[in-house]
Image (cartoon, rainbow, N blue to C red):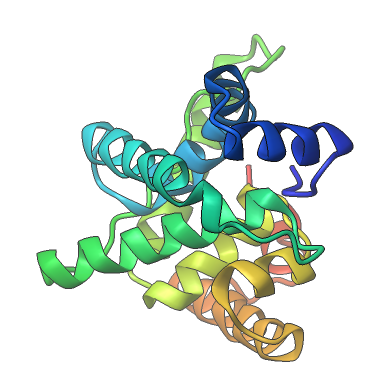
Length: 195
């Protein structure tokens, strides 16, 4: 998944700035699923994820006239709003975020034992991930679950790519410790998408 702008986004943004409701709706339809997925990984309930996602798009509507195309993806602007709202949410809540991994993945597998094993592994990763610091969770969720590039995640989190790579390295190492995994063959420790 990428937050990259398309030519269509440029036109939709211009139309939205002019007050075109259809353009605003299309921007919402294009970006809402990725924003919701990111937020839902970071909070402990779908209702909270829906509320925060709604607030992202309310802010988009309110602030669209202030959006300046600086060559950065429009989706990155929305992810940045979402990240700020998540920070506000946890500042108000004074608790650690709970990261939910999606069980909605479709599978062609019919072997129930394989499915159960993957489910148990996802739960194990989920439990370990939610104990990590907020910045580690953000980096891991955006890089490996949202499959964003270093440049995109750096932009969203307002960090340099070098700092982001360092955080990712420490986050993967911390996740490996939490999982008691020292076997380098585990794909999620080499930066591949977890089960």
